Image (cartoon, rainbow over all chains, first blue to last red; front, side, top):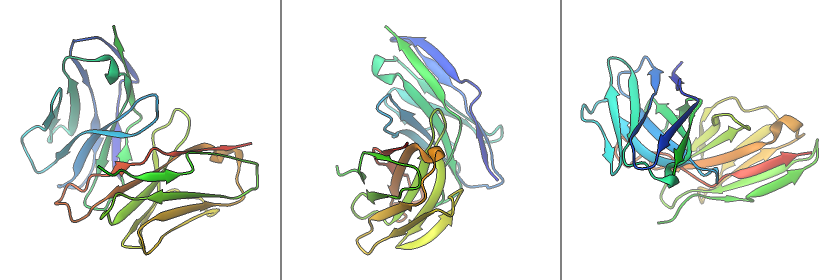
Length: 114
Length: 115
């Protein structure tokens, strides 16, 4: 069985500053995929960023980047220049292979302060 | 770009009633997934379909059933509803041929309230 752990239930950051959300996981697979999804108050699940485990290079998407440490099974999300619209619940998720279900962590609620 | 469509967006039912949730995947996506998110919880996988065949099954109660139709839309049928079924139900779709990433894109969800 695969598991995803997010140890920070809540975090807060000042607007324009940088924040890092932590995620660790456990899987016996050698190849897998990792995702960060954002769920704002509207409850829509929005893809933030994705990482293929076989790629050593960390994924980046504008202000969002990850620190993927395969040996440590760690997948943290860094948000630079935080904006008020980044206020949301952030879920880390793992899937084994193409067509497989997502296993989610329990989420980190991020509040961006003006 | 077209997104996943779910209907209805909100549904209120009484205990022991039935409910049908519908999902229309992104065009050319061949896989549909259903997730249930209770209040304050992370989404839990229920069931998935690939090319109209059930591909995986999670913690879906026997009272629930689902199928994917020839036009790739999917329906989740829920019978003998219980108070604990109140949740946000997400449908997601993916394209298995889109390289190895196979990212799942979520619909807006159906909020089911059982009274």
